[in-house]
Amino acid sequence: MKERIQQLKKEKNAVILAHYYAPDEAQEIADYVGDSFYLAKVAKGISADIIMFCGVRFMGESAKILNPDKKVLMPDTSADCPMAHMVKEGLIEKMREEYEDLAVVCYINSTAELKSKSDVCVTSSNAIKIVKSLPNKNIFFIPDKNLGRYVSEQVPEKNIILNDGCCPIHAKITVEQLMETKEKYPEAKVLSHPECDEKILSLSDYIGSTAEIISYVEKAENEEFIIVTEMGVLYRLREENPTKKFYFPNPNPCCADMKLNTLERISEVLEKEENPIEMEEEMREKALAPLEKMLELAR
Ligand code: 13P
Ligand code: SF4
Image (tube, rainbow, N blue to C red):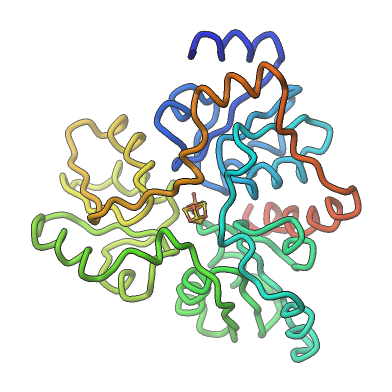
C-alpha cells in the first residue's frame, strides 16, 4: 500500500500533509508532518497539483482557502473536528453589537464560515503572541474556552470573552486520571496541550501545541514525560527520542476523526481523486483574510 501511494504521488504530482494526531502509518508516508500552524504555512506555499490532507476538515479547508488553485483532497470526508462548529448562531454578531472595539479571534479549529466572520485566526502555538499584538482591548475568543482561558491568563491586559466550546477529547481528561499517572511515574514531567481543562493545566510543567510539546521533549534532559494530549504525538516522540519514556493518562486520549486517515483511504482517494474540498469563492475570500492576518502577525 505504501509503495502504491508513493507511485500515485509521483504520477499525480501530489504531496501528503499529516497532523501529529493522524495514524502512525499516515505520518510515516507524509511529506510534511506538523502542528496546525506549521501545516497551514506549508499548505500556502505548495506547488504540487494535489494536496492530500491527513487531518480533519478544518485543516483541509484552511489549505484550500490559502491555496485555491490546488486540488485539496481528504482521505475521509467524515473526519471532522466537533469543536470547529461550537459557536451558537448569531453570537458573533451579538458580541460585535455589544462591544465597539471587539476583535473576534478564531482558533484555527473552526469552520470556514466561522473564520469568515472573524478578524484573525490563531493556533495554539501563536495565540498569545497574536492576541498581545492586537490593538483591541475586547476580544471574543472562539470556539475553545480552554485555549481562550489560557490565553487570557497570559495576556491579562485584555478583556477576553470566552465562548462555550471545547475539544471533547482534551476536555475528557480528568485530574484523577492525571494524578493516577503522576503517582505511578513521579519523576515524569507533565506536558499538556492548552485545549485541556484549567485544572489539568495548573498541574502541568509545560503547556504548548503538539509541535511545542515535541520540541520541549527533544531539548529536555529529563527521561520521562506524561503527555497530556491526543496520543498520535507518540509516533514522532518515539522516533526522535528512542531512549525516553512517555506515558499518557488512562484511557489514552484518542481522536477518532483523526484516525480515519488510513493508508487504505489515502490510496483509494488519491487514485480516484475523490473528496475534494470545495467552497464558494465569496466564503473563501472572507475566510482568507483572518488566516492571512495570522500568518502576518505570527511572523
Ligand atoms: P496543534 O497541533 O496546533 O497543537 O492543534 C491540536 C489540535 O487539536 C488539532 O486539532
Ligand atoms: Fe478537534 Fe479535539 Fe480532534 Fe483536535 S483532538 S481535531 S480539537 S476533536
